[in-house]
Image (tube, rainbow, N blue to C red; front, side):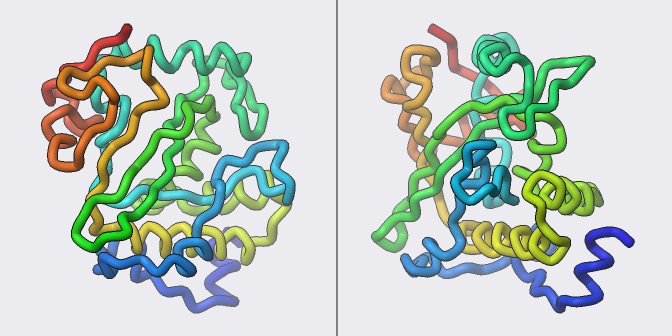
Length: 231
């Protein structure tokens, strides 16, 4: 029996915040609700509660608008390869070392909603991390669902955290509900972590307003214009 089948025998789940059903969240996010749903999804082996990894998904409004989408492949290589080499080409969460290629380089984000309705929140790059394919998939739970790979996410959460199927599913639901709150909101992009490594014309502080993001490139559209350069 798969983790999904186990879950379906014991739970009735609200799918309103899945990627297959576009939610319509309020533009005001209650602070208590935000704190209830937010977790560090990549705490790693040193996690005080023993939870190395949690499910995560990005709101649709920022899909593909990321570092990898803003830069050329050569610049992305200059950013990602040192990250992987510093980690010994091992996943920083589970320790797995891929045998045929380097680990993935994952962009870890934080989201801070605006306190004033109608103004953008801030999506901030917190770290670049070397992840194996399995840990990386857990950070893109919505994509895993679209690809029919949700059981792989649940299996990995169970294995790394010592969770039951019910615990793993509850975390996927938490991530989905959090993503639903963020779904329709606008986000300014804060890439200040990469100051000294990356230059974006017109944005020397690497703080990019929401309205400008679409014109700078998108990893879902490789032919988009990219005006960045490395330092």
